[in-house]
Length: 555
Image (cartoon, rainbow, N blue to C red; front, side, top):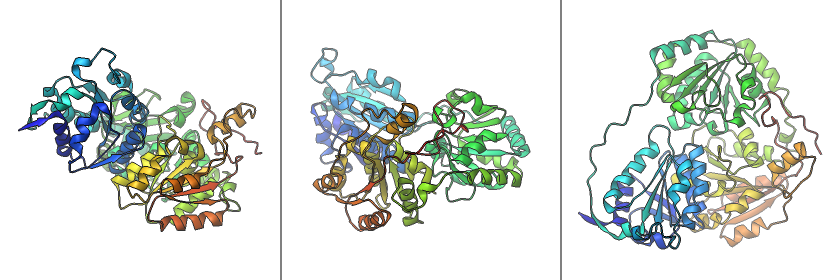
């Protein structure tokens, strides 16, 4: 069967089970977009290429499938670089297809020629340029295999426009060669881990993003119940262990809860499921380790001892490892340890949750109350809004809390929510952003309205770049350089995009706005007015010990 290269790309997408692609056309991908014109898959035109790749990322995070985005050469390709970095640092499976100048024009500084393979080499799991029609289909098939294999990540395939228009003979898929087997825990490692955990007096289970990719929720719940473990989670691990469960202490790290951080700091055994020990989780790494025994479960050998020295590394898929470890563990009770944790928990300041005025923490708890039992997908932006959501939302399912963790990409939230809405069309998607981050990719609200996606977008408006301002208040002598924002008409903007909108300055107004948003049958933006002086607490200063909390003088 003879096909044009552009038609072969579409055929590979269908072969790989792709049902939705996000992108933006341009000169070097016109042949591909011509093939997409009559293709039996959803082709979503975003307002900007950055929106396209974040949407593909959100689609992948919500569904567990590989997200796909398309961009043209030159500025189209460079506009997806931030999205590739975002996916790379959070281990999200993506395939990005970029157009390129024709093969005969390569290396001549041709119009919109950029070496996107060279640009993206450090932030992709793999990338490649297709220089001949014979390479095209095998390269694309390899890209999808690599994106999902082992630790997931983004892969970029750069396709010159000349390859897209050439005719090729369609190669039928060959039997896949067996993938190189992943490292697995030895029986000795599992026995040692079981002995350490069985002897623990003050154990803690730390759940990271790798447990999401592994699908290990059932095994983690069984582990915590059997060994009576307090459970803390990283930002990327939210929802894998149900946060409504009494054993869940919530977020740990720079903005972790007091009980979470103190439990980690004072644990004698820390069993870690799929976390790379980022600096935002550990603070001072030497003091983080202390005298505790760390059992690290991870699929990626490069993560062992990279940031924190693990006493006992246990390689392999987290779910499979736990299935082998659980029969070796004994039932346990740790009443004294739990009593200490409850005493620590009682010391946390929860004044912003009272509801005497509208605050972001109260708002997060109200969302959890309003959606109790419905399991919406929360997609957050980056900054104070992100941390308040991580601290105070109650998320009981994996892939129902999506955020940019490793890269901390402002602007991820709205297009990420758009992608999640395509991935899970029957689930309510709630987007949470700050007034700064929303403006970065806010035009994707127009995309959501055009596509009929009923997502709810909540903008926490404190008229500033909140997290930077918080650091300026605490560490830079209250010199608020470039962080105080001028007024912007968010509701007018929402209406101009074809979305609904309502402003809320009190708790009662927020409840009314949320009820209206749920009935709107179109995207709906709620602008929540909160005080600039509200800070994300608790907080640990960068590089400090995880239990060394910043003393805050409120203004």
